Image (cartoon, rainbow, N blue to C red; front, top):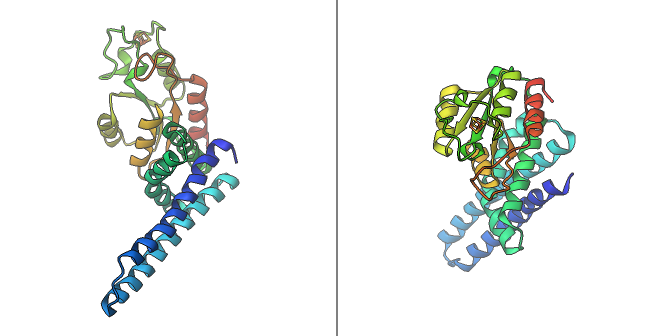
Length: 249
Ligand code: SF4
């Protein structure tokens, strides 16, 4: 397994271990020596034990699916649940360990992309949506591409032109979203069966968590001018993602 993915998997395991150690310790600190409190503690211990077991199974499923490059449909939801529930804790533990949030989010996206790949989905181009952030557009461009990306005049000053051509090559939908609310609205309206999302680490990780069972493959944008201004994306990476989703990888 690549080191990029190992960061998130490692933090998932540490997060689970922290929960397993911390929660019983807190329970013991607030323990009262009555019969009722003992019963309540016993019930809580059983519930938490089952919950931790479920999270552990989810992490194990993620590791197996990545190593085998093949999904385990019966464990898919548990894997997603474990990752979603533990993700905020991985950021907290990462901070304690001195790992930058951006690095953890990037590792999370790499793990997610591997899980999407492991599904070997084979969609028609029309079922795939390429979802882009507005910051890819050149800031001096007067054309309103958020309403309709076909307003792009293909002047070549930003990568929107290449991305539109790529979407046409694969007959995929292509949309520009100014934020998470619009992205959710577009997905609800167009109902794609798969999404290739381009964004920064933060927006991608939030979007992936928000996606439920919809496969979302994340491609990180390049930010040579800092965040949210004249950003770019590696067109080849977007095309590779399209090939993977359309042909089943
Ligand atoms: S390529 Fe399209 S979106 Fe980009 S600056 Fe030119 S006209 Fe505007």
